[in-house]
Image (cartoon, rainbow, N blue to C red):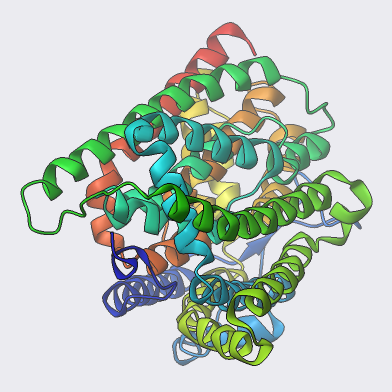
Length: 472
């Protein structure tokens, strides 16, 4: 295999970029119109920012952004929007990752990893999919990692190319696996941890049921990804695009392994930093896990660049080029963030929740749990962030409980709504950035993964109904 066949630059495809932007602009217009037809209202908040039940009141004055300000909403959200510092952090980290991976690419480290992995696992590539799926799901389920794992995309993309798999398969090994991992959260501090704390219950409550769900979805997700891989291989075998595999000589393998080991050490260090930053309470409270990760990456990448390229200046030029390649992500992130900004300025989120909750509370437990799930899915569209959504929904749903639906079931519905949509909604930054990197259009993504996502949705409903039946 030639190097040029395997190297994959981390940058956005123009077609997917324009498609995603068009979709997000349409969503912005829709939400803007919604602020004109939905009454403004709000719940009172306590000193901790939690919603006070039964405190909802409609506002005398309808608040909304004028239509001409919808265009400026992305900039306004970045400057004065709630949570804007998190957005700035995400943008900075992504640019840093683009630069560091460009260094690793030009140093030959990524190509070396692909060569080593392919030679070792080419005849066991389906078993490797099962291993990757388990690892990615565990990282998402236990530590809440998803956008951070986009750092693995260049390796997965190069590996997929060598295996005659599509870009969709490469990005699915990250997005689908981590999305399902979020859905089946076991100890994720950002979803089940926050939700349990707000609800006043232990994170261990209902853990046995979540573990069962994790195991079931792990098997189904692995089977699905293997089927996708086999479909890609069958398609490539009928075209001239097939990449032919050739084993390395022992000398070549040793040379590539030395270079790959440097990158493996760097990745191990980065993952260790992420785990420590998430698991240690003091560091977790700082909320700087992504920053620590980025700093580790920069230091390690420049050291590898110095050893492999012979000059920090050359490594610096590569870094700037990589950051430039990922610059379109800024526009996509700002467009997605502005959806929430427009809805908040129109004060429609609390109103929509109040109307829905009032209706759901009058239904039977089985129908109510389905409506509850749908309600969370609706709010996920406007509020992709787990913490912000938990602060709004969990206090209300647990302090004003629904008949026949326990706190454990409410938290489970919250987890399903928070994780499932990470690979569905165009307002999810991780999804749109991942698709942009893979040069996979949003419509194409829905066509190729839509049936599996629909299956996940229906299966989630089945798990919720079973939870009501057994009285979880």
